[in-house]
Image (cartoon, rainbow, N blue to C red; front, side, top):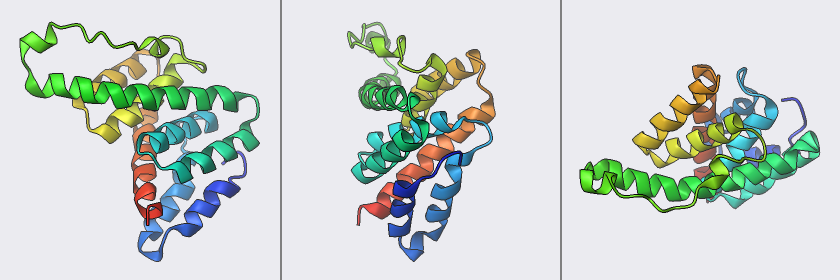
Length: 179
């Protein structure tokens, strides 16, 4: 980790002994080899918001603001936008994909999504956050589209893999903190 994470460490300490693996993963997953710290934290914040774990959101945002300084505001802003848009999109597009009816495919979603094209950080960073949320929702179409977009933008499959690993650990930690 390139900066201290006292708030996240406090969350980790609250995880029970039964969740020792999750506690250890939460300590290591944000130090991936393929994402910059701000990217990893952006993915984690988006995931924590997506699974509605206020304790993790607060801890991650606090540590990011303390450690990353100026870039933190843009990262948090994109994490909020990504989690919100993906909460909408994964429901809508999963519905269309699961039905597989041409009549629905032909309809325009008529849902605003302009933030996808105009993120506060970068298109690549926003897509990493979106991929994490898509994985949490289990929306196959969204996962495939965001992964393809990331590869097109120059992200490695390893970076995509790290984003989904972060989302998985955030999801598991949120279960442990819910009790």
